[in-house]
Image (tube, rainbow, N blue to C red; front, side, top):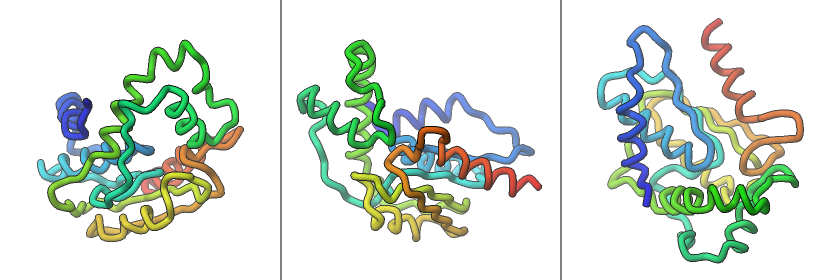
Length: 186
């Protein structure tokens, strides 16, 4: 199984930010836990993180219902993934797509559900959270649980959208990220 820690070890080994650059760390869903942990790793090494962008995820210390993703049926997995999609044509029912990605998706879902740091780590970087109020698996209280995860500001933007914050014409979350980054570079 992929663990959050092993994925962060791999990402951290590949990324060496220059000290003069602004550094933002971003992630949606499982990627949000990875972004948080990567920002934590950078800060421990004395690297300034200018912002952490989180979407559709609980704070790492919040316990949630654990689903046995490795052993649920393919149909149950497809149904769960389809319920998360913001689009009706998510592609999860495509047999070729599913056969290629099902094992990775299962491992990532297990890692996301099971991740629980030994103790909460408070970041120095501001956290920007995008939240879809139509998300079937991330209730508002999970979003509110981020309130104590940074010594800097916590900024929440709520959208009338689902888990992946998409509509037919726009990646809503990416638009949120772009607004903040552009404002910080003006």
